[in-house]
Length: 60
Image (cartoon, rainbow, N blue to C red; front, side, top):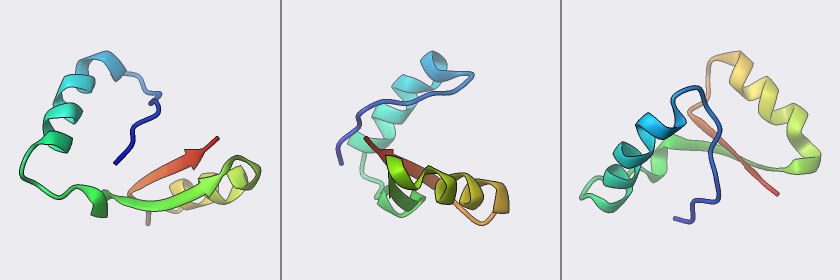
């Protein structure tokens, strides 16, 4: 798992918790439900708005 960056309202408060999850014994890869390119950003926003997605990752 490669983490390139995050954006959010509690980014700094959750950063260390996220590191602990990634480095811990739990497999969190299933949380990422969509991986899209920057040119397909609209698909990512539609997935998030639908309420049927987990983490949507945009590869730059």
